[in-house]
Image: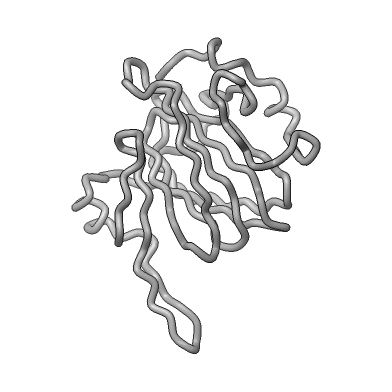
Length: 181
């Protein structure tokens, strides 16, 4: 597996080795020993999958202690713009984000440690998005912030007229109003 560091410590782009031939392909998504060699010692306990259409924008979300989550995210089919925002208190990159295109074609994964807000926008007609979590979903600990807050400066690669949002995501507080993790 090829590891590509990002501008934010701990946030890693992972490119699995793909074995392809005329029958199709095979790749390992997760192998505990390989990830431990990279210093990733998560005990993943829950896998999630979502299917969305073009323009769906989900985020920016996280969970507070004791339910904070690290995630390993990837796209099975389609293309998304994946966003991770550092909300770790005292971090030198607090408030900075990484944007990465994940697709069924490039097979890239993003490892998002605890302490990040996460979201994605669907750039293809449809996308199937999956992620492993090292803690269980807990609705009472879920938090969010405005995906379009100018303080974050995120280019979602969609025009505002194309955004398809949940009611919840339309009403999150601004970045300046969140409590860092």
